[in-house]
Length: 177
Image 1 (cartoon, rainbow, N blue to C red):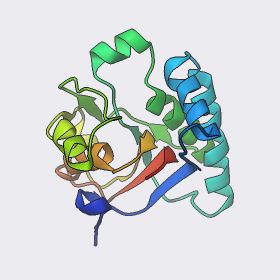
Image 2 (image 1 turned 180 degrees about the horizontal axis):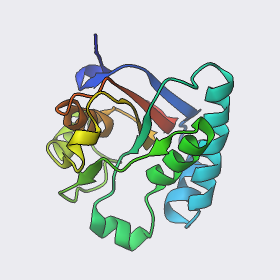
Image 3 (image 1 turned 45 degrees about the vertical axis):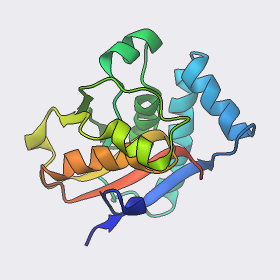
């Protein structure tokens, strides 16, 4: 049976490495990763969290790590996807592959100052599976940098779910209110 994260989408477990706090260390780390060209920091944190998960019985929990995608225009500007870097670190430590099964087909404005419902509306129908046959029957770990309301990850999970994975779990570098 699938749970619903905040009533928005199908998911099993929901985890994060850090607790997000404004003006706290987690926000400083995320700003370094996202805006100060520090993708290696995301990868290192992913490896650290992945090692922790391996040491605590999660070594057989997933087949693949799936990062939340950036739109290709934003990716070109930033030069990297911070969620993908975190996912690559997780995948390395967990000894599984990281697969870009999703694309963001519509560019969206930042979620930062939006209400819960505005966040959902902002990401509804913006994701598409680019390798649907490879999703079926897999235990997927969906990865994002920040989990606030769950709207982005739920939209991704809803897209993935149409292609019948065995399970979808969420993991974020940081989660907050």
